[in-house]
Length: 524
Image (cartoon, rainbow, N blue to C red; front, top):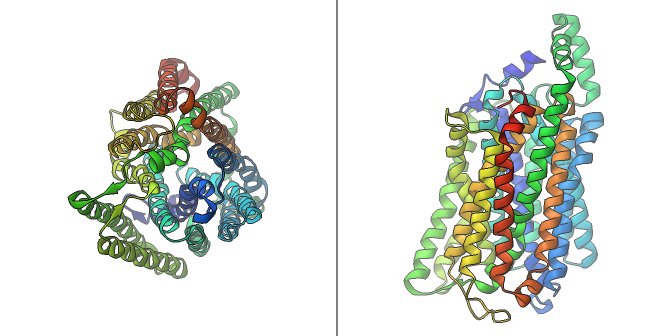
């Protein structure tokens, strides 16, 4: 199987195996569906019945949001086990994508029962999908650990390309036309992502096959090529037990600090969206309105053009062998370009400009698409820093982002949403949050894949997502107190909480750097 994996590195796209970019686009469409729906969920729930929403209280909506995002990261614990023991990574991804497609379809009906059915399907489907995508990458790069940080950063660009498009288009359609159309659009592209992966999965060779098929393949290879695989497995088994235990402890410590990160970061889909809706000046007139139209068009077309170029580079390497999968991918991009063209035309024919509250959510993805290559180069250069220092820096940057919101909202008086603040504060917050995310999220995936024994990869990715689930639930729980804290103190005080806590956590993990380096036993 070692030879099989090495074959993946023969056909390269932008310096990495073509298979990485198959995963890039599959994950892109899954994130399109997730973030597109996430951008709309809280706004839909708190909108009045006359506006097509459910008319829920903010605390109730944010609590459900926290429960849902917790479930999205809780179910991968079981999805990783199911793939490791029964389905294999590839079939788990296909089945998970199908279940999520059904979930989006259910939400398009806009009834309370179908809302819960849809959210349930999205949680279950994501559990099968998410950990096993990253497990496939881990197996692809098991003999190329020096390229893992760069590979996960590129993969993370796919994540955020999907988030960018999903928030922009689902949010725009949901806020301006119909919540149902916004939720439904998310499901359409999830379906295309599933088809593209299904028809191109053979590019991964034996990676991700079910345990039964892998065992049969291993026995055949031992008969044909001697005991190569047995030797590789034996070397892994002979790693000292203390080293394995120490590295697992390091993974748990990293995971604990991700709770602090996500409890703050996930305010983006909750309290920060409410802040954009109620307290941010979004009506632009005259020259400012015209300027925004051009900026928004560029922000839409340039990233989409870059992603389309990546698609073209993948086509050159894989179209002849995986025609159907590439056709599915082509159709999805034709639809996207059509919707984008219609959106830009509509915006330029309207005299008034009201920036959608969901629009600010695209900034995180836009900044990641822009900054990820630089961070990837940084992690591969001689100036690379250790994992604990990356975590510390990431938490510090996250706290500084909330510092902008705390500063910008100082003049807001409770119960008087007539006071609107500049969009600058949200833009600055998302910029610093993005830089913090790039220091933590893709790096976490890379370190887990390096520190954990191969046979436990799927399960430990699931455990990592369990800690993220805790952070997401905390995000919804703390966010649900936004009105109470605002009435008792101020909205500025609410955001100040999310300034102080990440900064303190960042200083602690950075201070643990010597201890963590010993626990990792040479893994860099």
